[in-house]
Length: 112
Image (cartoon, rainbow, N blue to C red):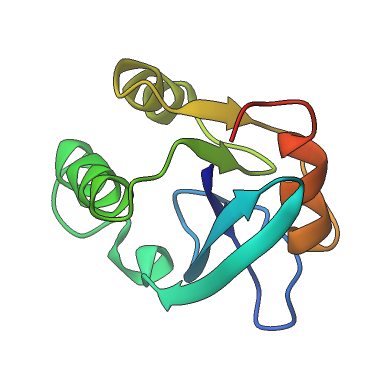
């Protein structure tokens, strides 16, 4: 299962999904993280550049390019939730603390 999570430089959950500076993409297999790669997406800087639709498109392209099936985040607004739902991406909210632990906790019991 491919999971995206907003992360801080020290590996914690970044509280804002749409304004995250970095997003990690994890490949979770059989209850373990098989790979973890962090990307400097700069959504914090790009959020208010252009239209809301343009920002959502930027996020959607990133998710599609990386084959993301689940997003783990602390918070996101209704328009972003709606977009991810339309994309068929599962969203797990209210995550906090260590990002790797949050990813594993979210994927327990879900098919890989």
